[in-house]
Length: 253
Image (cartoon, rainbow, N blue to C red; front, side, top):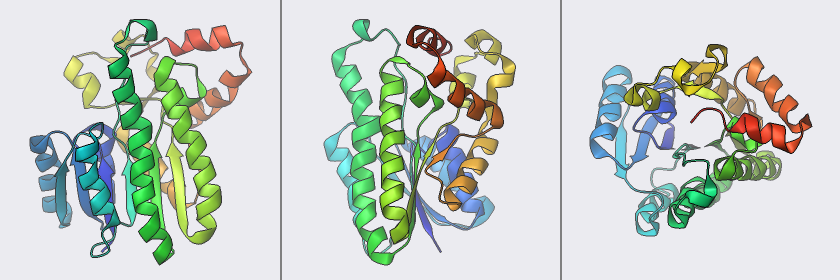
């Protein structure tokens, strides 16, 4: 059976990737900081789909903890066929008021961890001539949005390059760029979409986002923007003046 390793797998899009990949018959390696949440996702996938699930508890901003994930990706005994770099979080948009160490950790989780895990996965995948890497970015990659937009833009740019170089050798790389998605994050805050300052039509559902992402990855696309409305917006925003685009990026959390 194929094996999929998913970071940030304890909730939200990560947990949905776990469900949909398990439904397709993949054994899972689930990575996040909270063991209890990972165990719930693993139990659901195992009971519903009969797949095997391993858990790695790791903070991807910590070099010592990320080493365990790198080691698992490099293992020749049970190779990983699909890597989903989904771990991530946001910071307040006022960069000048943020603690710089918090900003550095933010950069490490989104970009350094993605780079390290891709590097670990690529060797075995290229040796076998097959593999799939999915990097969960954001439409913020196309909209000026403090350092969150910047780290996601790096993921998109690197994914486009990597897919062009490695797809001919059997390993595809896809950056998934969803807009606002209903996940446990908003439910825990008790904030319905209207209180986020975002129109209801701009919101997406996690199962739809993941289904389209997996479909685009299977087609070998370097960038996946789920839903026609967000595809249109990502083409429009680069045509706007920077100040107007930045004001748009200030909306929502």
